[in-house]
Image (cartoon, rainbow, N blue to C red; front, side, top):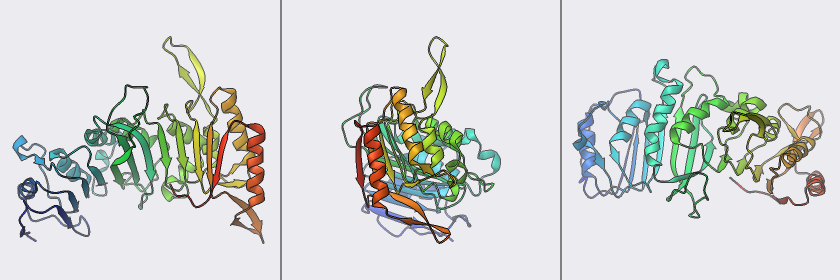
Length: 365
């Protein structure tokens, strides 16, 4: 159906246009859409969901869309259309960008690792000149999807130098919707090409807000090797915040990997040697390792011991909503267990008196 734009585009500050899904093709041209957006120079908020027409690869520079007042951009559409619009936009780097790249209609040959890198490189334009400090893995509603957000600072320090003191804020949120369109769940190495394209290898903070019980992370949750491969992407990590610790992830934090020096000699090094602070939310500790993928207090102590032996001790630990699995009438039931929590705290303090431990409740990531 054709669309008539019945408003004065030069005066609006917020524009929201949405359809329920990508099933039909808009009956207006890319030129019409670009023209109305180019006139909307006072826009502060722009949301476009499943309304983008086909946008040609090569449009002349005079078709660029400059929105100097924009503070929030939200685009959801077929991945090629969303990215082609993104390439035409000229918006402030302080604006918050939220993009959902829908790969459901994308041919398999266009969903390769190389495509992930190329798509991420295009989005990286919004992070140029900023210091990406925090990567947050978010909950994705659909199987085969990956959602992440990046918090960054305005100024960029020298590589390996001190982190900017300016508070970081979320500037880019990307969802790769049904990227794995064969229905498979993504593995740890799926994150590497995306982080390479976005330039996130130097981040200092990793937040895992998605639950490891999420269907997308079933294969990752129980695989120490996958966790090791994933954590190796970020050699400068200093802080990790995980929604729910798993045994394989705990083991990976104490894993040694073979690395090469400048002189081609090899040595064993911890996966994240600079890690100094760990936060666990809703951790469920077990007395034994009989529960699949569970972490145990003994295993956690062993991991901390190994880090001390490799001169990379953890300095601060935050544990929120501590739980223990207790068998009740033949089934497992989660209960708050103060004695178990106190025992865990005692173990930590006896082995690692220097460790700053913060035990709390009802804290959200």
